[in-house]
Amino acid sequence: MKKSFIFASLLFCTSAVYASTTETTVVIEKSEKEAITITINVSSAGKPVKGALVRITSGTLSIGASSTNELGVATIAIPSYAKQLAIIEVSHSLYKTQKLPEIILENGKAYTFILKGKAETAEEITTESAEKVTKIEEKTAKSEEKTTQYEKEAEQLSAEKEQAVKSAEQLRKEKEEAQRVAEEKQKAAELKQAEVDKQKEANQKELDEAQKIKDANAAKLAEDTKRREEEAKQRAAEAAEREKAMQNGTLVDAKSSEEKAKAEAEAKQKEQQKQASEAEKKAKEEQEKAKAAKESAEDKEKAAKEKADKEKESLKDEEKKAAKEAEEKKEAEKDAKEADKKAKEAEKEAKEAEKEAKEAAEQKEAAAELKEKMAKFDEEQKSLDEERKELKKEQKKLDDKVKKGKKLDKLKEDQEKLDEKNKKLDEKQEKLDDKRKKALKKAN
Image 1: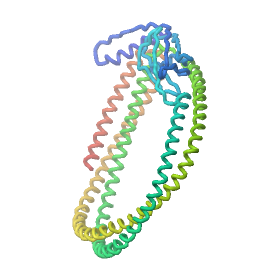
Image 2: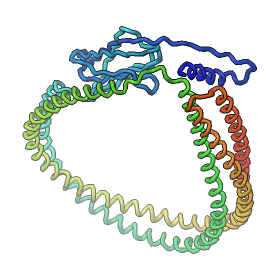
Image 3: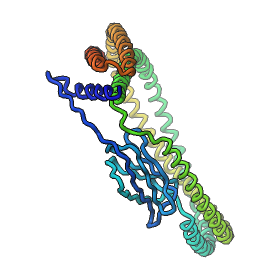
Image 4: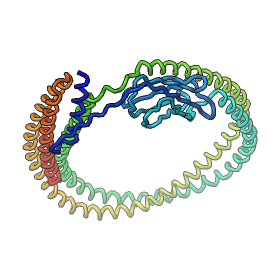
């Protein structure tokens, strides 16, 4: 029974490739299976990596797994291998995962992986801690020097602040006069603009109504197109799965072996992470002692800096006030010119609003025509959807028969006929979608 199934599977695959010719050539290849054993060597920075998980997969199937020992070595035996392409993957919680691309495994061969670290080891944490303590002590000395510097800066800033206060007051008076002139001109421009806005609002309402109709039809077309594309992808995936089901059967599932290797690797990695955590804890204690001394010096620096910063901020506030008054004066003068400009623009917009009203009416008429066309297209789509449902039912019945593994030659012919029906239906759908797109393009 199994030989007949493999023979039929090969017939199904080869006939799909040569369906357009008058003759069909069937090639049957027999792959010899063998038991093989390979060795994986894993290291990082010249040292062996213990507890790394090694997985070997072919396609979506795991065919071997193990974890590395104290020497960073893992030996994996594969009981049934027919020279399929395979991927070797090495992973560890403290290192970046590495993969060897698809290769044909060789019996007795050793494969080497050099991992890059993504977390620190206990030795690295201890070394970095000593360096951090030295840097903290250097910062303590610099903090004391800055304290004296901040005290002198605060005295100088206080004197500069008094001068800034006088400048701000003079600019404030000049700004108020410029603002008064600008306000008078602004009121005149606003009255004219209000009339224009009323007309434009009416125009926009007409355009919005027309656009809603167009948007609704465009959204429906996009949604329908996306749904049909997803269905086509699903059909293609199902066809691939059916072909795969008729061909598969050459690999041995090593899932249980992988789970055991994964558990061993996780246990080893947890122990390494524990050692790293203890080293990190000790390093933190040393750093805390150095930080205490540094924080004392920083407190003094902070007090001096806060005083200097307070004076600096006070000076900045006064300078900002003066700058703001000067800027507001310029803005008031600018506003007066803008008011004159707006009055002229309002006249121009009034003429444009009349033109827009005419265009809005035309858009509304086009939207109504589009709505009527799309309703007819929807009826055509409904008919196509019904045909698609019937084809899905036929496909399901055919898939159920294929699963039973009987009369596969006849089922292959039935599948080809069903694929041809789907193709013709796709062509009808494409023509209908083109009609929709042209209608939308014309309406826009």
